[in-house]
Image (tube, rainbow, N blue to C red):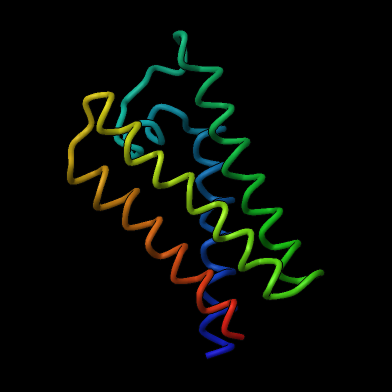
Length: 123
C-alpha cells in the first residue's frame, strides 16, 4: 500500500505541474480542456496565467511536502487541495461547460485526490 500511496501522490503532483505548464504555455488549448474555452489574447489571458501558476505551484508544494516532510503532511495537503477540483466542477457548470467535463474530469479528479489523501494517511 505504501508504494501505491506514494506513486499516486507523485503522479498527481506531476500532473499539476503539467497542467501549470499547459496553462502558461498553451493557454487556449488548456482552457478548452478545462471545459470553459477562453481566448488568452483577450481579457482571459491573465486568468489563464494565474491558473497555470496555481496548478504548477500545487505540484511543487505537494512534491516538496512528500519528499521533505512525509506522507502525513502530504495527506493533509491533498485533503485541502481536493477543494480545488470540487470548485472547478462548479465553475465549469456555471460557465456553460458540459456535465461530462465537470464530473468526468474535475469531480473525478477530486475523488482521486481524496483517495490519495486516505492512502497517505494509512501509510
